[in-house]
Amino acid sequence: MNIVAFLGSPRIEGNSDILLGEALKAAEGATHEVLTFRLNTMDLKPCQNCGGCDETGICVVNDDMQEITTAIRKADRIILSSPIFFFGLSAQSKIMIDRCQSFWCEKYLLKKNIPAGPNGRKGLLILVGGMKKEVGIQCSEVTAKAFFRTISVPDHETLSFLGVDAKGAISNHPTALNDALEAAKRLLHHGQ
View 1 (cartoon, rainbow, N blue to C red):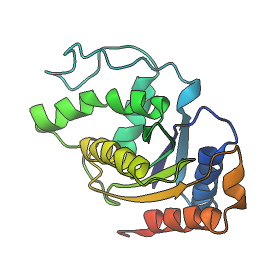
View 2: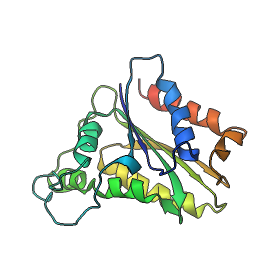
View 3: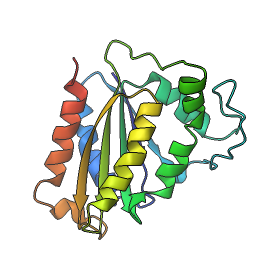
View 4: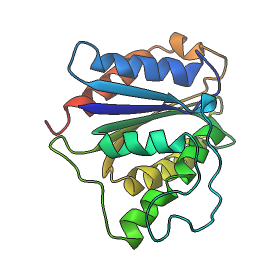
């Protein structure tokens, strides 16, 4: 199974990074191929709303998004791990998501879905934020749902943690690491 993971946090070894690492342990020792993109280290320009993908479903901006696009097309499972900033996904996550406008054009204008393949296509959203209000989860979830559906992922689970802010503090949460591992196990075995 092809697993594509996106780290939307700029903070190395931060809470989103730790949770993603824990989730990816579910793929260890199996025949899964895992590809992780650390979005903050990539050359990704924001969507230019230029209309260049309207008729082809292919983005005309030349940067690292081509590598992401190829990986998304091959993926059976997609994981997005992002901090919640100002009640939404991180800018790094949002740039990548906005660049999926080409997939939107392909799916909704050109009427071409990414084939599900024998394992189907499923997703996992991992969110962590310092605030304690649910609105941060709700706003992030709406954007992530649009992302997943646009790239032909019809089903995803959301795992979220609030009130966790300091770098690495998620490691002190009583259930978070195990929750991430178990969510990933469900992701990998769902539909098989």
